[in-house]
Image 1 (tube, rainbow, N blue to C red):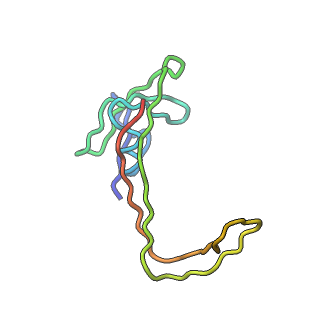
Image 2 (cartoon, one colour):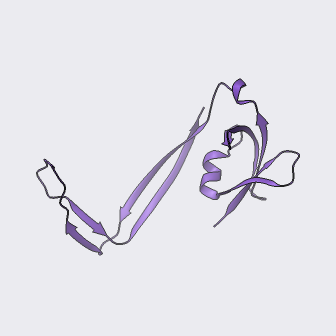
Length: 114
Protein backbone atom coordinates (compact mmCIF):
# COMPACT_ATOMS: atom_id res chain seq x y z
CA UNK A 1 0.00 0.00 0.00
CA UNK A 2 1.05 3.59 -0.68
CA UNK A 3 2.10 5.44 2.49
CA UNK A 4 2.43 9.19 3.13
CA UNK A 5 4.60 10.67 5.85
CA UNK A 6 3.44 13.65 7.91
CA UNK A 7 6.49 15.85 8.58
CA UNK A 8 6.67 19.07 10.61
CA UNK A 9 8.23 21.81 8.47
CA UNK A 10 11.88 22.23 9.57
CA UNK A 11 12.06 18.70 11.01
CA UNK A 12 13.39 15.58 9.32
CA UNK A 13 11.67 12.78 11.23
CA UNK A 14 8.05 11.90 10.40
CA UNK A 15 5.32 12.70 12.89
CA UNK A 16 3.09 9.93 11.54
CA UNK A 17 2.48 7.76 8.49
CA UNK A 18 -0.91 7.46 6.81
CA UNK A 19 -2.15 5.29 3.95
CA UNK A 20 -3.02 6.99 0.67
CA UNK A 21 -6.77 7.20 1.26
CA UNK A 22 -6.40 8.76 4.71
CA UNK A 23 -3.73 11.15 3.43
CA UNK A 24 -6.05 12.41 0.69
CA UNK A 25 -8.88 12.79 3.20
CA UNK A 26 -6.97 14.52 6.02
CA UNK A 27 -3.84 16.11 4.57
CA UNK A 28 -5.01 18.36 1.72
CA UNK A 29 -3.36 21.81 1.59
CA UNK A 30 -5.17 24.17 3.97
CA UNK A 31 -6.49 21.38 6.18
CA UNK A 32 -6.26 21.37 9.96
CA UNK A 33 -4.75 18.04 11.01
CA UNK A 34 -5.03 16.76 14.60
CA UNK A 35 -2.38 14.42 16.05
CA UNK A 36 -1.94 13.56 19.75
CA UNK A 37 -4.16 16.52 20.75
CA UNK A 38 -1.98 18.94 18.77
CA UNK A 39 -3.30 20.85 15.77
CA UNK A 40 -1.26 21.21 12.61
CA UNK A 41 -1.90 23.30 9.51
CA UNK A 42 -1.17 21.40 6.29
CA UNK A 43 0.98 23.64 4.08
CA UNK A 44 1.74 21.19 1.29
CA UNK A 45 0.98 17.65 0.15
CA UNK A 46 3.84 16.49 -2.07
CA UNK A 47 2.34 13.66 -4.12
CA UNK A 48 5.65 12.74 -5.79
CA UNK A 49 7.60 12.40 -2.53
CA UNK A 50 4.55 11.22 -0.55
CA UNK A 51 5.11 13.80 2.20
CA UNK A 52 2.64 16.16 3.88
CA UNK A 53 4.36 19.26 5.26
CA UNK A 54 2.64 20.62 8.37
CA UNK A 55 3.21 23.39 10.94
CA UNK A 56 1.90 23.35 14.52
CA UNK A 57 -0.92 25.73 15.45
CA UNK A 58 -2.31 26.76 18.83
CA UNK A 59 -5.62 24.88 19.14
CA UNK A 60 -7.07 27.64 21.32
CA UNK A 61 -6.68 30.17 18.50
CA UNK A 62 -8.16 28.06 15.69
CA UNK A 63 -11.79 28.82 14.91
CA UNK A 64 -12.40 26.13 12.28
CA UNK A 65 -11.75 22.52 11.34
CA UNK A 66 -11.75 20.70 8.02
CA UNK A 67 -13.37 17.44 6.96
CA UNK A 68 -13.51 15.37 3.80
CA UNK A 69 -16.75 14.94 1.87
CA UNK A 70 -16.89 11.40 0.51
CA UNK A 71 -19.26 8.68 -0.59
CA UNK A 72 -18.81 4.90 -0.39
CA UNK A 73 -20.79 2.24 -2.25
CA UNK A 74 -20.71 -1.49 -1.59
CA UNK A 75 -21.42 -3.72 -4.60
CA UNK A 76 -22.11 -7.40 -3.94
CA UNK A 77 -21.01 -9.84 -6.64
CA UNK A 78 -23.10 -12.86 -7.58
CA UNK A 79 -22.62 -16.20 -5.89
CA UNK A 80 -21.59 -16.71 -2.33
CA UNK A 81 -23.76 -18.06 0.46
CA UNK A 82 -27.10 -16.71 1.67
CA UNK A 83 -29.31 -17.67 4.60
CA UNK A 84 -32.34 -16.27 6.38
CA UNK A 85 -31.62 -14.11 9.37
CA UNK A 86 -33.57 -14.20 12.61
CA UNK A 87 -33.85 -10.77 14.17
CA UNK A 88 -35.79 -10.13 17.38
CA UNK A 89 -38.89 -7.95 17.23
CA UNK A 90 -38.57 -7.18 13.53
CA UNK A 91 -41.74 -5.82 11.97
CA UNK A 92 -41.09 -5.94 8.23
CA UNK A 93 -43.00 -7.73 5.50
CA UNK A 94 -40.00 -9.58 4.08
CA UNK A 95 -37.48 -11.93 5.70
CA UNK A 96 -34.01 -10.44 6.25
CA UNK A 97 -31.14 -12.28 4.56
CA UNK A 98 -27.47 -12.60 5.51
CA UNK A 99 -25.09 -12.97 2.56
CA UNK A 100 -21.40 -13.74 2.26
CA UNK A 101 -19.30 -13.64 -0.87
CA UNK A 102 -17.27 -11.28 -3.02
CA UNK A 103 -17.85 -7.57 -2.69
CA UNK A 104 -16.31 -4.44 -4.17
CA UNK A 105 -16.14 -1.10 -2.39
CA UNK A 106 -16.20 2.06 -4.50
CA UNK A 107 -15.00 5.17 -2.70
CA UNK A 108 -15.20 8.69 -4.07
CA UNK A 109 -13.99 11.88 -2.46
CA UNK A 110 -15.77 14.91 -3.86
CA UNK A 111 -14.72 17.86 -1.74
CA UNK A 112 -13.81 19.35 1.60
CA UNK A 113 -15.75 21.35 4.13
CA UNK A 114 -14.22 24.05 6.32
